[in-house]
Image 1 (cartoon, rainbow, N blue to C red):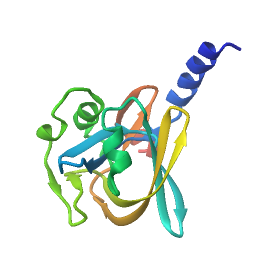
Image 2 (cartoon, one colour; image 1 turned 60 degrees about the vertical axis):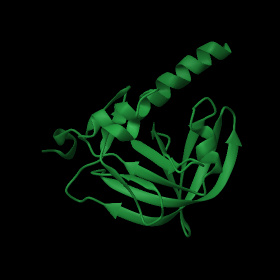
Image 3 (cartoon, rainbow, N blue to C red; image 1 turned 90 degrees about the vertical axis):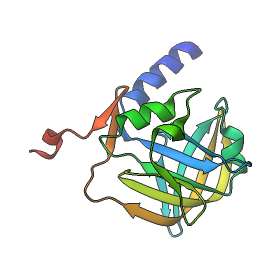
Length: 166
């Protein structure tokens, strides 16, 4: 099998794997907020509480995340599709389009997410054309009035009610 064909099939397989959607944020060296949409998020460990996500080496905020000692993972709520698109787009004032504040952990935290996990950077692992960032969870907020967003087949939105048999 040719490399190009493998890459195409890999993208198709992974695009058909349902995941949640997150926005990960931190501050750069100037103290400015940076963030991007991420679906490569997963739990790692309960003791200590660890999560991971990966960032493409081509992303403009790569250096900010690699130099940061903290980051916040926002598990998006089902109705935050516009926010998801904004943080996935290039050359956009991402934080100018949403409500956010600086947390007690000095991280930019976006309002109205399903959940926010504020993390201390635990380890970074170089892996192909991405860097895997592992964070130790320092603080967890959950909005129990919301449901998380779902990503499947290059579409995202709320979890369908019929998924729960409703």
